[in-house]
Length: 293
Image 1 (spheres, rainbow, N blue to C red):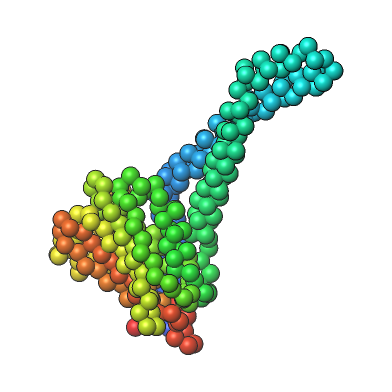
Image 2: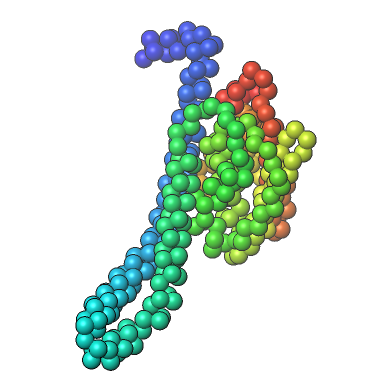
């Protein structure tokens, strides 16, 4: 054990920084996996709903097809025997052919919508949970926010109406998966701050060479005594087992590594607003992995 301790003390600053970076990456990935775990039940519920009505629609569609086949068979028989025409008319009335023709397009459209919804949920979850490469890339902030909304939908939909006011924004230089983590944390926290049913407002603005993303809720608010500790690691006001105390701390550090700012204003009983400020481009020669001092 003494030998291991001595070897750690003898490491160069570069080696210690690399070990710290590795620990930071592991912590961030652990928090991401914890967030996904907390949302997994809700996501499964969201997937099961559209699959349920698609399955029901397909069952009905099968019944319609069988009726159409019976009518078609009767038509074939009627071609050679005019006496059977009354029977054909009876079949058409019995199976309500006009209603089938009217309802069939709606069934198919609804089924298509359900499949698209499943695909959107899965794509958003996949994009959010993908391994963080740490590489800067052009990022559509609105797309990233919408992906976070899709993943967090089950946490939000029973608590709040989401109201968006998106300005026209250019792509920014960032690590998309990290920004997704930030927006997800802020949205889930906003939803949890609302006790019954309220509103979450998301506003984006272009300010010169940076963008502003404001996420405001009309929930319970944050006491002034807790504002100063809000971004401290492991600080949480949630009950035991409901939060790690890492979400806001990691979000704050992610924004710092992107050379941005995270601000918060809150009034107990009236709500909270988080403002995320991000530059359009990262400083030349630097990456989002480098934490500014």
